[in-house]
Amino acid sequence: MKQAIGVALWLSSLATVSGDSIVKSTYTGSSGLHDMAKATGKYMGTSVDQDIKDSAALKVLNNGKDFGMVTPANAMKWDATEYTQNTFKFDSGDAIVALAKDMGAKVHCHALQWHSQTPQWLQTLSKKEMLSALENHITKVMTHFNDSCHHWDVANEVMGDNGQMRDTFWYKTTGMEFLTTAFKTANLVKKSLGLKTKLYYNDYNTNTINDKSTAVLKMVKQLLDDGIAVDGVGFQSHLGFADKFSTADQVANFERFTALGLDIAITELDVTASSASPSAEEQAQQTDVYKNTVAACKQVKRCVGVTIWGHSDNHSWRSAKAPLPWYQPGGVNTSMVRKSLYDGIVAGWGGADNSRGGMRIPTSTHNNIWGFGAASENNSGKVAPAKGNNDT
Image (tube, rainbow, N blue to C red; front, side, top):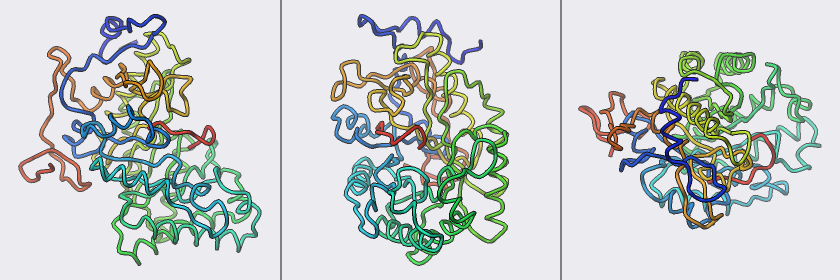
């Protein structure tokens, strides 16, 4: 199997700790992942949840180099913000917004409508009551967070893997009206408050052309044809080491969406192995999946950036399968160690020069329309969450 950086490179950096099979990063350059993304006019982000309390995780978040976008993994979901009807709680979300401000990062807010992590009272309402509750929830939450949100995931995972609408309480009770109501309401709030936030649809198993991604494309196009604004589509990208999605195949799919005038983003990237102590070969395959996916974003002009779903295996919702670019051999609140997966992201952004252990950061040729980017002739621009279930 072709490997971008080479299995031998990783084998040479195997951990010396007894019983630790994790292959370490060999990258020694001074630039971080967000530095590399900025060089292409894009961003590198991470989700944050319980790792906000981990001193070592915070050290990585605050290094000013690796992340320029933060997604609250759970703190803005319905059960966290309106567990009791019309009683709102925003302290957890506010804490993550404050962290992002301290980091100098933007916030990708997540998620206004989803079928999971919702209180029981919502699921038993009549159609009229449910749509009214949805309008109220979106209005109150967006109003509270106001211009703190660079993006909003308005609707999350409404499509099934078979290309049919997911059979949730939303769909059973309201048909398609929950989706149109969500985006109509979000657009009204955006307009009334004068917000610049971008409104996204977000889903998984959509990286390549398949029944689901084609159905999502048709669904979003229908919203646009009906005069309901959608600004972007998020591709979650919860992947595994055996997912042999080429960069070209992902680019071909992503460009179907950008052809509609949409931005796209990789919103929740992680790549699992088969266990918490994977073989070097599996880690090489994980690294290649990271590289191909990041490189696809780099190649698509309207892909605004890549967010990984957490950054340390120790906090990941998929921690049993070593999915992220850092880990903590000594456990939480101990030093973060970069894994070879980090090198896959470096290679995806085109930043690695492994012969010198340094970086090549190209001058961006993109207009810096998303607020990120390195200096160019026309423009100077200057963790892992606890999950409710297997969806996000």
